[in-house]
Image 1 (cartoon, rainbow, N blue to C red):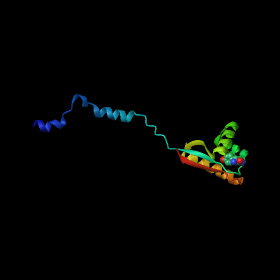
Image 2 (image 1 turned 60 degrees about the vertical axis):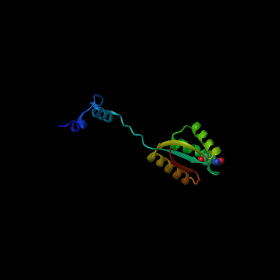
Image 3 (image 1 turned 180 degrees about the horizontal axis):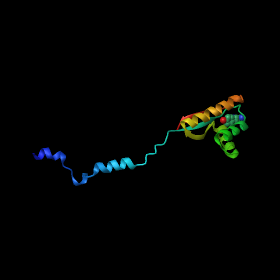
Length: 116
Ligand code: TYC
């Protein structure tokens, strides 16, 4: 056998055990991939009563009366506000719950979601 044919089979000291280490790292690395998140937003309008918006925030987003009042005022003054950040399925459920509740009470309140 010539030196040329042997060369690709030789390993430097630095390379020894390299595959093993890589495998070990790959296998033991804790992989906790996070799901994409979505912002749920409330939009302002001229007709929905402030108290109704506060009730929506308390009922569907689990916020205190004080937090709900604050967010409602932000929407009223700025036009919209993020009321929470959720996974796709939960965000979709919140949007549906708010839209259905607003329609039942004949208020034009709008709730939307957007990828963070
Ligand atoms: N602008 C409404 C009013 O003056 C109040 C309001 C706040 C409506 C927030 C919608 O998402 C909203 N009655």
